[in-house]
Image 1: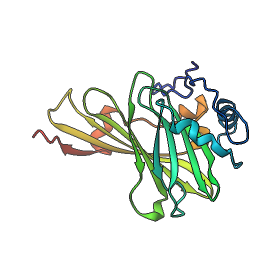
Image 2: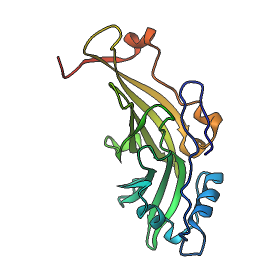
Image 3: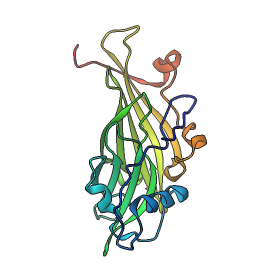
Length: 217
């Protein structure tokens, strides 16, 4: 396993791949096809049956989502919880699906784990198509990452952090929206992963974040 760590958070940017003899319809082993895509970050060529290698694996989850706002449902593939950090977008075509993006699901080694991946909801103008929720197993600490689409590229547009202030105040939750603006295809790089902005420091949260009461109150 190859693991890289950022200064602010130890986001895993490369994971241990399950070895498989599954091949695409072009006769390309699925693992080799995936490695080639990881080197480029995205691909325009049709890899035929590559999607099936993930659909039939317990190591992955597959979600329906319109990744490019064309009205057709595509496929978002991610490593399952505690199984790694791969994120792959498959674009729906007349002949099936082609791989459009290889990136990270933004889970962290020893930190936030995968929650829910779903179609982003909101104004079409903001271009957000997918949201990825990650969270700490204990306590209230959730990061929801929003991925937007524009000009044939996907971007990590913003992250909304939701954390409880258990040290100083009871039943108080901070909602902190942090702008990102990072191309998803670049997040296979350690240097780029280190640029993902984390939740604001506790000393400034009262000024830059919203406060809400815990449901327990």
